[in-house]
Image (cartoon, rainbow, N blue to C red):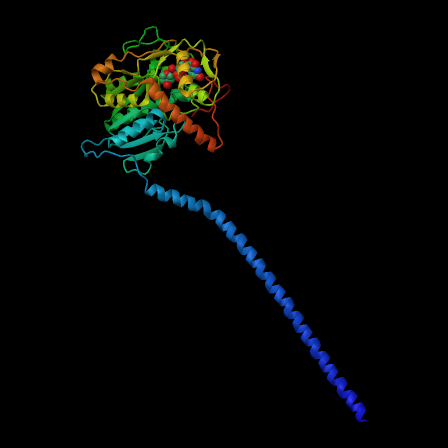
Length: 421
Ligand SMILES: O=c1ccn([C@@H]2O[C@H](COP(=O)(O)OP(=O)(O)O[C@H]3OC[C@@H](O)[C@H](O)[C@H]3O)[C@@H](O)[C@H]2O)c(=O)[nH]1
């Protein structure tokens, strides 16, 4: 009896123990599962957070860069600008002011202390050429095509807008004509409305393939009116005609600069003119492409000389056309050899077919500019070329970093339809 009670008691205790043990085991199991679950979700959360942080960083990095650029632009140092009193400070419009010549003219007029508005449609001009003035209180940049009217208040207009390189102006002849005709009419209309003086950037191309050498301002020229260069040559000739019509009929003050071949930094590497082509070819170790025999001549002026001439003419009382150029004449073949020598290039000279209607001889007679403006070019050819070569090699580095290697543009007319507006 006692035995059987003892057995029952023991069994009851064992059962409780068993239950207790099972309960403990269950708790331990649940705890370990919970622990794993907590660990797992923590690591998922951490992973997720890391991924999220990475994503946020990817978005923020370029913004940070932009902020740094903005900070830099707020503290940007501009080239030194002279102080001019209200009386001497002029409001000046430069059409084509982001182009090669226009941007150098912008620099000069800004540094002289004037208020400069640059208008450009960026067909051949580039923002980079004037970006160092952006944000300056005396400077304004307007993306505008002179074929459309413009309404602003100015005292002087330098009307430079037009493609100037033969491959560029032949690329879209209708647009070249519109720019030089409608564009010039619009600017003369503006000059008339606000009483501004207008200087037209005309060209030695108004003399065509000249029969008079050197060319003086009294020579009427020898232009093929239906040839491939006519859109530019005749466009500029009619632009001159318009200037004198506005002068005679409306009393607008006009100045006309006949600009001869000009070169220097900020020429577009790809614009197809002889200086940019030869320098680029020599720097890239490629053959220098001479069109025809290379016996045709040109006289090249450095851009700073031209800019000084333009400003002197604008502020003179000479309303008749004035040649601005360097009278030092060279054949194109001589010129190719000189550039090869200055660059130290081993590239060959390659003779290609002659360009149609290519002027055979060109050299300015600059007696008028010397006499009436007291102006003449002062930068020697080699000095100007060395500066240009330096600029082009920097540009090549810049382009290489941007994965773009420019090729010299051939003087060929584009076949097929082109866009013209
Ligand atoms: O790669 C080339 C490029 C040009 N040339 C030749 O070099 C000479 C000069 O040619 P460019 O294209 O530089 O300039 P162009 O003298 O024909 O016209 C220039 O005239 C004066 C300005 O108004 C303009 O800048 C432009 O129209 C031409 O005889 C041309 O045929 C070459 O032999 N090889």
